[in-house]
Length: 173
Image (spheres, rainbow, N blue to C red):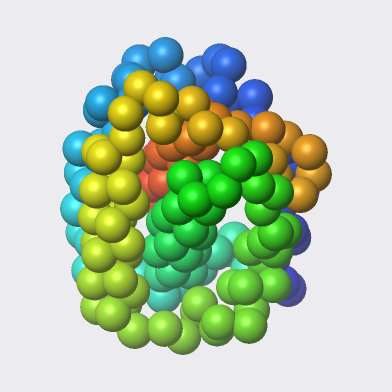
C-alpha cells in the first residue's frame, strides 16, 4: 500500500495552535526562528540515528527516514523561496508535489547518515538566512501557486511548523 497524498491546507497554523503537534505560532517570534530551526535539526539527527529508522509504522505511513528526507527537502525549498522573495518583488512559487518528490527521490532507501548531514546543513542555511532579515525584509511577500500569500516572516513560521509537526509524526520531541 502506498502513501495517501496529503492535500490539506495547513496555512491555518499561522493563526492558531496545532492540536496534533502543539505548535503555537504566537509562542515564538521571527528572532527565535534561527535557533529553533537549528535545535529541531539536532532532534532530527537523533531520529535518523535510530536503528529502526527505515521501518514504516504502517504501510501507509512514512518511516522516520522518509520524513527526515522530506524535512531536509523542506529546508531547501523554504530557503529557495525566501531567497526568491528577497530577490524579486512578489514572486509566485512553483508548485511542489512532496509526494512525487518522495517517490522520485526514493526517500525510503536513502542513507540515514547522509540524510541527517544534509538536513542539519540545510537547516543551518535556512537559519542563517532568517537570521539576516531586517524588519523591512521580513515583510517582503510571495505567493504559492494556489494563491496563498506569505510574508517572509509568516513563511518562516509555516516552515517551522512543518519541521516540528513531522518530529511529532515520528514520536520525537
